[in-house]
Length: 260
Image 1 (cartoon, rainbow, N blue to C red):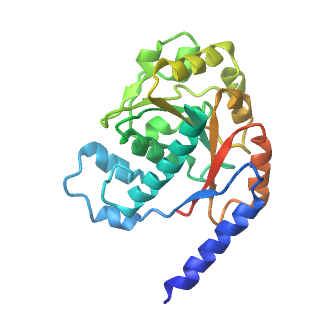
Image 2: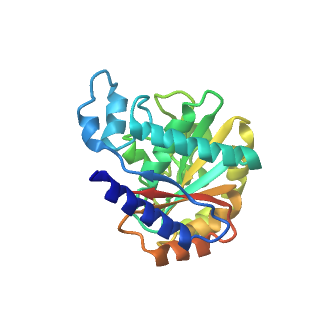
């Protein structure tokens, strides 16, 4: 019986958040509360890379866990929405740093890549504070900023993860004038090429926070859909409204409430 007040409180939080959303955003797609304690007790049979994923709370590779089920449910909702509209790119961001957007982006990428019909390209677009490569414990030789500076080809930047059907495009060296870089003709051309290169590829952009810099606003025209991550007990209703105001020209397909 003790669980029911907690469930009621959680539902009330979700309803309050949904009330703050504009009519174009239908609902909170998922409530994520990762069970990190159980991960520590289920290490047997994991590869070295899977252990790295667990360490960073990337749990969607586990086929028998409630956390992976949550991401599969989120994956299904997102794919249905994107297939309905013919979308191929989705950007994921949050109001502030620390809300869990990179965790959500990485988990969603792994979950979607497990769909036999889909390949995934996960791109780090936080050019001021790149974190995806470090988060996944990858060692890139080059990244997006290197390509845009003419110092590397796309093939030199892509990293194939041990899982099938998923590649990572790291950000590369940090740059100060990131919004100008993302708004450059070279970036516009690259975004179009990545989108059209493979019919079965879905591109996930891990974007900088919406309320920290103007980079997401600059790149929005090149994104089909947008997923907003907010953090329970941290993100305020005002921050949600301000974020959605920035995204008023975007197709926001939903909100993820990160309760970690």
